[in-house]
Image (cartoon, rainbow, N blue to C red):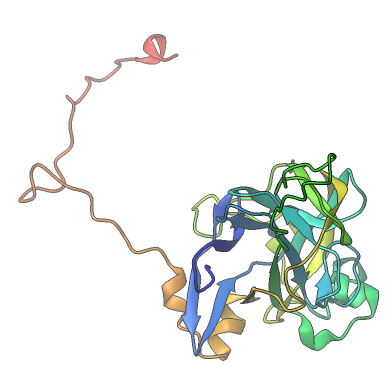
Length: 281
């Protein structure tokens, strides 16, 4: 999804691909599936740095506290994009975002919000606040022999935040719209005691995610843009009235050189006893 000026974009990725977003009653909804892993991608399409404060289930993804305008965030360079794989653990790793059922039957399947004792009403939401950087206009003072031209890419004083330098993530399960989509739990082959429950986000496996501290001075105390996405299972979204049929990809009709005989196949019928194994590589 974009902001109104379309110079910042927020996407949820599964298997490295953006998931389908559905607009309904002024809100943006995405489908989640139990035990699937997702990533949060933020793209800066401006010539200046921005500060992005990400929230999942009402918690800041950098410190696990209730998220607000004064929470830490990621500084994104001009024309750059970062892909956040999960909850920040330290400057070298994160815990993957993983969809989990709320009030799961197993204590091992608790959402991170439930683990932290946060307000459960905020589960099922992903948000990003974006702040622009304060730009100090250069000026000349003739008596100042040490004057240096202003460099917009040099950190200037302000609140300490985390800056994503390199993003690494381990392999994830298939995309929501892909036929090879699977979930990581073998228990799903049996009766699912959590079927029908709404989703939250769990504290998944560790994955490499390198960051470093930097400084950032905001141009305003209020965010320039605010992104909010709601997520749940197809069943949960359907109960809200969301047109869930829009999550299914539209079938693509393949062209056929013989439309009057669509079942015609190519190749000659091999005789009995013919063995082609020696030609297989």
